[in-house]
Length: 185
Image (cartoon, rainbow, N blue to C red; front, side, top):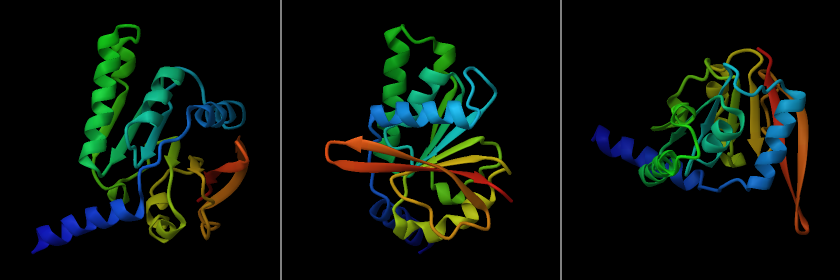
């Protein structure tokens, strides 16, 4: 019986948080902002985690462009497999140093059960319907950690997060926002 409940939780999480890949142009804007305003440094000991890593786009972008450790957690086994295949493919291409791609790790799992204390940057795409489940997760982050919420503002987190920056991306006639916070307690 416990196994069924566990599988239902995985199924439910995937319904509530569908995969949506972040546009590369937006990623460049987001990471340039992190570099200029939030201390992201090339080849430093900083670490990033992508909660709901999907096909690994954020993790791969981070490692290839900033040469820092980047981890991802993905609940969907097919997307995790796709991410790891993309990483293996880049290793085979040869133009990317193998040691650089060793800084990537995509784990299969439920990010709601993960501790964030070792990460300097936490990237998340989360629908507002999921936000009520995130407070305990962000409490595990270290003070000063930067939380990047793509597309949706994190509501009701003022006791633990302080909004620091809003980045507006223009795409055709639509504006898409990225909200950047710092963990304050």
